[in-house]
Amino acid sequence: MNDPAAFVTETIARIRAEVPGKAIIAASGGIDSTTAARLVQKALGERARAIFVDTGLLRAREVEHVSEYFRASRLPFEVVPAADRFFEVLRDVTDPEEKRRRIGAAFIRLFESEAERFGTDRLVQGTIAPDWIESGGALRDTIKTHHNVGGVPKDSRLVLVEPLRDLYKDEVRAVARELGIPSADRQPFPGPGLAVRVHGPVTPERVRRARVANAIVEEEVERAVSAKTISRPWQYFAVLLPVRAVGVTGDNRVYGEAVSVRVVESIDAMTATSMDVPRAVLKSIAERITRELSGEVVRVLYEVTDKPPATIEWE
Image (cartoon, rainbow, N blue to C red; front, side):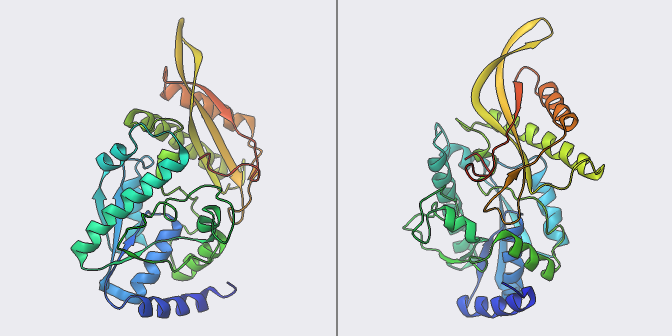
């Protein structure tokens, strides 16, 4: 894509041809789905309805932040609470691929109900090229199944509309800027949410720990960016690991979990480089995580693997 303005014009025309009636939009608050939502809103007006699902797997204050973001983007939306549904489908599931498949299926079943209520069979998704490439598209091996690709049940009656399917993340951001969407360069957040940042069983308690650790990483990295200690990374987050380690609290032995911190630079998410974060920033992150999750998390690690051979997210 060389001309974002031309892409917007052409895509709006294509959406109008693809969607003769109404459509619902799977809007996560990320730049991909928000850009897709704005394109569909421009094409269909009141015939489009954005759905933001509170899965219980979101970051700290995510519902409030996304609501503010949608309002700033002039995007009408509705929040659907569904935490109990998602924790139930993830009960006793530890395999990363199975997590993604179950989350994708749960989203689709929920959207089927919402689409029926709205009187449509069209579902708009913010799928982009890396999603279907990593999910095994175009005769490639499956790197990881993206919930919005491989997680879609084969018997779903929804017709998918994916206006950004052939774009990469940097191209999506260019389209977002063309559409006047604020914070077009905000960091990506996986559709399955913290479920793929909690290795092993996904329980409300373990998600809470991951949420606290993730918020600390974001706050400390953003503070370092504001102080010009580091340049703005592509993505920065915490992962709760499926291991336990011995720690000390006061004079007492504790047996808690471990967290890995990931900070990477990238252009299009197809490749990424681990960022050389100053030790003082990492030390502050480790001290805050072990203090605010005292007795629960006793060890903080920093991951230095590039993509490839690793992926950006751990699962």
